[in-house]
Image (cartoon, rainbow, N blue to C red; front, side, top):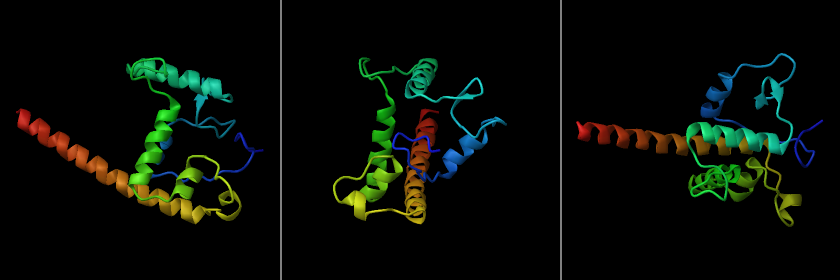
Amino acid sequence: DYRTKEGKKKIIPINHHVESVLSGIPRAIQHDFVITFQGEPIRQKDGFKRSLKTACKNAGIPYGRGESDGMTLHDIRRTVKTNMLNAGIDKAIRDTLLGHSLEGMDRHYIVPDERALKKAMARYTEWLDEKLKAAHKKLGQHLVNKL
């Protein structure tokens, strides 16, 4: 019983950033869902969309394509996919991690295994950590310069 739109099992390795966030979320006894509303799983795409819209509103971030600088879920996927490209992650691995179907004959011949996905996620996390460290250093220096 897979709950993906393709009805297929997907392996999505997570990094220490995601693990930290997920470990802080209280778990329901009756299910293993992570994204919930009032303790119940959000089962429909529109339910998640509504939750993202509310989160953006609460954070003061414009939501939707019709808004100036409005954000959508696809913006997050686009950013992650672009960052993975910049981190040197192979296209087939990027597509698999983000749930994009491989095209043409690739779908028959390229089947990244769990080890390859975890290795790619580790490389992406190293790249991301370097970028975060540089941003923190730059922010720290900026704050020191302001004093």
